[in-house]
Length: 479
Image (cartoon, rainbow, N blue to C red; front, side, top):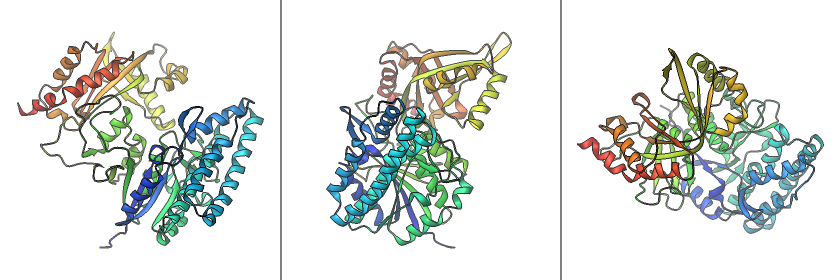
């Protein structure tokens, strides 16, 4: 039996890199730790910076600049240059700085050309948008991080944009990964892996078969890491490591402040649901792409401040009696519910999933009205629904859409083992004077979903109420 060489796809987001690269020292330390046992493909997001008196990602900064050019009121491009120059001057020697500067000037030239096209066309969309975001963000950062790692004595290389391994369709602003075509573009990446300890690559970015730059939707660097793992799993012993400010907690620490617990294990299903409902663990589409390829690639969420604290995500995970059956309570604001004839709903669902490749909705339990079965779809992004309302109503003229809804869900594949959990959760929320508009519980999906009004702090208050009584709910299994 051939033993495959271990390789870790390590993803570092903008919040980890920090404002103007202030987290780079910790990032490099983490890469060195992984290098002790494995080769590394490091996937980098765009950095953060201060723009218009607030902390923003370079992606958001670039979008603002691009839109200003399209509106014939161009903003100064200096912010883009300043961020990378500041980081480069801090970390690079003169010779490495000169090497990076050669690449940066080429990228900056491409940005200027794209913005001029946005001004001429009065539109900042499609290829113009993708190309601007790529060279103002992830591509430049991945080249810069390669040179920074070399300055730390790491044997490092970067994936050249002209030999990009992630091939997508030509849906420029919301691209979709094409596995078979990508396999034909792996040689450059594999050569880099064989010659180096670390290979740097930008997340979020793809290329069409014709070599044009594309972008995934937001959160796309997670998908890039997953796609690279899928591509490399036949040649290496692949795992993924996502550096975060914390491992996974039992609720969003911005909502719940007390009695939070670290979650040691999550299944793909649990992680996907948590991501759909607002927990920033990893993009649910990244999990879906691994699942669709029938793979079981381990994903580790590492606390960058204390790398011994980790959450491991697998297709199936071990369970111990000491672990809580309810692993996470989380909620999502700005939701909406669509009600329509079930026959029409089936056609809509097929169109969304297969044609538009949109999955950010959940099918709730149906009901009967005037002898007709009505399907309810919970959309987790009401803005998407508003943009496509006319299209959705075309499937059924009697469609009803209700906005200003929030959704709270309990997550745990083994929740069904807790006696009376649904009634306990319902009474817990009611005791806090929160009006439950709908409660959807399905044993098959091990999901308990509560729909409430999206007003003021209702969603957060619901999460707090359930999390506060989480231990009591769990104790029900021992009664």
